Image: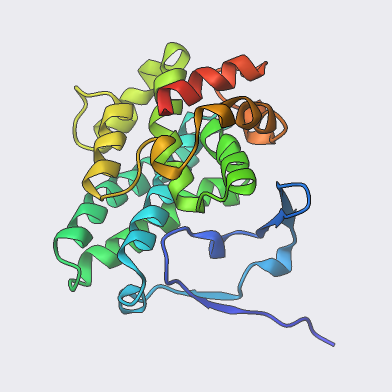
Length: 248
């Protein structure tokens, strides 16, 4: 018999429906496992902005930042190509413009449609095999071990990872700032300000992490592949802790 195929209707901005990937949290070990199969991907995806109107505001904004995270970390990865770079920058541009517009006028459909197009472009490099980095990898540990929602991990970590990585790719990050319309400001500052403007948590403290959790979080993060593929090499738990201090 033919396998059952799906038609997906997007109601958040995480863009997972554009990939062949699935993530499962193992409650016994507090770890996240990833699985991949071509039949995980829907046959068709419907982008109707009206389908997002009943999505809670915090969830739409948080998953929107998750897509910003896709765009940023794919662009910064050494495996990016001119084709994927263009998609990442355009996706970031659309999301950076659309997310505050949705907050200002929740009933307007145009910015919701723009955000959907942005998430689609932002996820395309990941779907084609470009890795992410430490924001995603540490976020897996933060979510699986401490119960922080998927989108909130990006809200808390992305700006900190960008600041830490700037020592090795600060010049490359200028293209991110330009895509967000402020080439004279750091990408880290722009994204942190966006998260604050959207009313999302911007620090580890804001999502319930305590000082005594830092060592465990740093150690757990080392096991995730995106951490190992970060543009600035992460070799020890002490490196992760430097990022966590920036996110504190």
